[in-house]
Length: 436
Ligand SMILES: *Cc1c(COP(=O)(O)O)cnc(C)c1O
Image 1: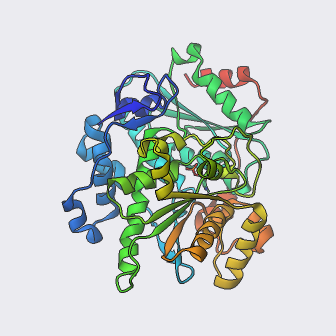
Image 2: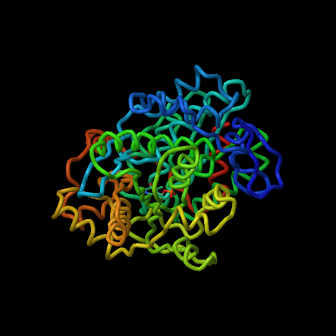
């Protein structure tokens, strides 16, 4: 499999090169030359397949000969070593719980897969690999955990001081070993700007292999397809006796990488009736689907802060899947914006009525799906993208976090280790050069 750039000005590359480079020089996004189709054989005994088998068969054509089969199978097994339960909340709404992994968010899947690919690819490199990543909360933890103790790879995480939750901060700062957490006296955009400056700094790049682990990397984007298949496996079993056929899938979206992976799975053969992209007040895409025009806006701060994105970086891939056919896209995907007030009310109502605790991102998803089903028939599920304990607002709104996962209790015993820096590239550079 070869990948081209969505801006069409850079060379086609293999999966290996696309992973190592992250982004093509023309600043487009890597996209597979051909979307593979799942075979009849794949569907024949689908219900009986293990998570690892599904992951392996889905990802294999995308990886091509960049990784041998035995290694790829092992990478898949390590990536999906936790549960992805589909849990019924109301008569026609279920939740796909994606928070049972190491850092309690769906980003664990992409981060684990990518880290293991990089470990494999850096085996025959003479220089050290440094992964630099800016985070508003969930990405940093997932990447840190995914790369923890991976030989030959150092990880430097930049996070905005005072702007991540308690659990998120502990997930970033308590690992040690090859993980360094930098607490930046600024906001997320400052962190991202610092990381970008480093990634463009030739005086560092001549000494180490410096790369980013952000959500546009193909090795983070593509494995997110896996859990859509796991959901469908459970969906068929649960709906065997009913008339309901294909699910409506609602995805709380920020950079639109997660939903884009779902749509890709669908184009490869996964039965889905409709996708709903649920956003918070950052409503550029819902407006685009209404008007056909992409506005230039700044992001606004909301309760579901992992989705506070004004310019969704993965959306060009969705356009690419639909060959830029706006009407086709509208046929398959709807998008709605849910306000903070409605999000908080939804969290309270779902707790009171169904005894289920939603995190703010999941609440946006639940609500968007519920509103759709008020006007349309059918049934479906939304993706619960992170565990409620990761967001301090849940306790304020709902009054409880519910059952606290064991991993969180362990974290609370650990001590935070971070280096505070100002928004100043020289301080970052000094730290990076010490790792060489
Ligand atoms: C990252 C994240 C999202 C948004 O996912 P995208 O792929 O950027 O659309 C939603 N919810 C949570 C909890 C997240 O961490």
